[in-house]
Amino acid sequence: MSIAEELGTDADVVIYRKFPPDEATLRAIIAKLEDPATELVRRDSLFKKLGLTEADVETVDQIVDVIVNNKMIMQRPLLVTADRAIIGRPKERVRDLLP
Image (cartoon, rainbow, N blue to C red; front, side, top):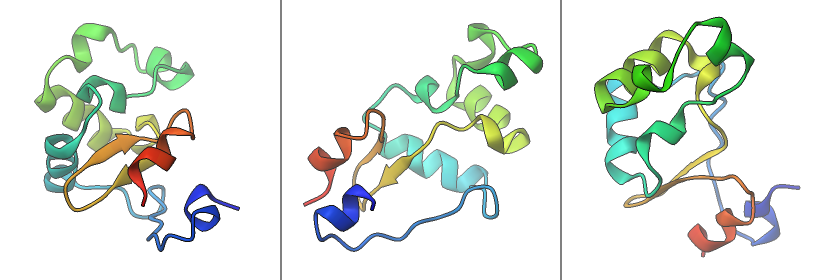
């Protein structure tokens, strides 16, 4: 059960693997993001495999480019409302965003 269901809140779930955000969508999300934009990029084995460094994901343009070209590197879950966006890790943060 998702936290949204636990809280009795309706939520649209977007499966980013099938429907990755495009550049415009990512920029809109970043504009609402309460977290530093660079946190949208996962620092995992893919980050290392792609040879990325922190210098490669410092600016919004770099972050958007990296995610558009490598959808699996986007941090998740990502929760977006009409006026706010957060990275849902740890999952308890979701409770603060949803009514």
